[in-house]
Length: 270
Image 1 (tube, rainbow, N blue to C red):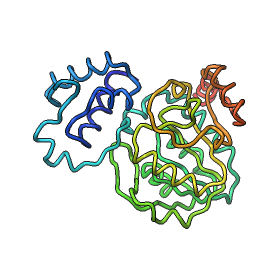
Image 2: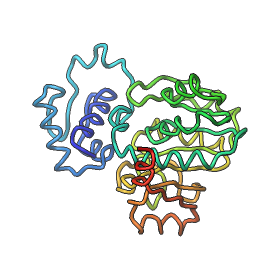
Image 3: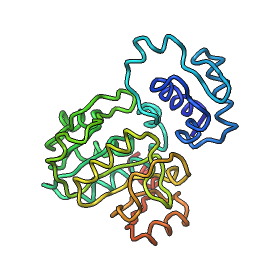
């Protein structure tokens, strides 16, 4: 994660709590303590927050209008959308190819899953998604039926998330769920925000098969919340830059792996 991306995550944490400790920022960004300390110093110099012993303190005026803007402790949609775009598009194309017209699917919010929108346009599927950027594309430019869950809107991540256990999705049933994550490791699918992890766990209960979309950058340890073990993943779609050890780890846990050549896909589309 680049410096400015980490700043976005730390700012999101500051909007949720009055004090962000070094350990909190390390878990959310996957960065070292030394990097986080430098980030804290930079943000304090910019006047974003106040540097205190062991952490970063929100400015008093953060209790104003900006504090009412909900955010999750993860990268903003706009930041993530610019990263590894060729790999994400190739992965998304391969993911949509796994679907059959008439299926009911769940697509979790994220910039990799958002790339599925272009390839879903000519398909006829029933789609439940908590990604309002994806929903907007599908509503206006596809033949898919679209359903949205209830909840609050998190503008920075482009997601609708409900903190309640009982909501509309409990009556939904899907053949597949497509999702990405902050990272993939031996313990499973990892997220960095507890509310997001809980929302994904609820959606998982409504789907038979889990399809994970993860480019090579997701196989670096970051985040601390396990959404599900590797054994829950039916198929993982990734790109050819993913280390062989990571692919072996997945296959050893019974995960079907689809590897795409992002460069070849990008050249073909050019």
